[in-house]
Length: 41
Image (cartoon, rainbow, N blue to C red):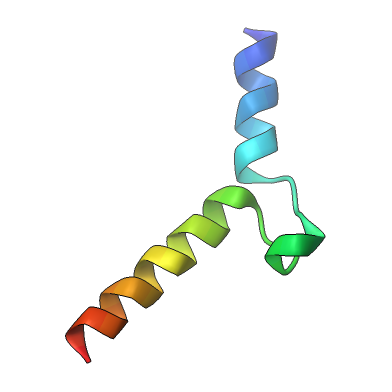
């Protein structure tokens, strides 16, 4: 259980300076949204 709790924190809340201080999950969401917008435009 502790491993899953750590992974949830690591991927969803930990901020990273190389990602513009976004969590890995938020960075992926924004990238996916940007790709969708580029396909529509």
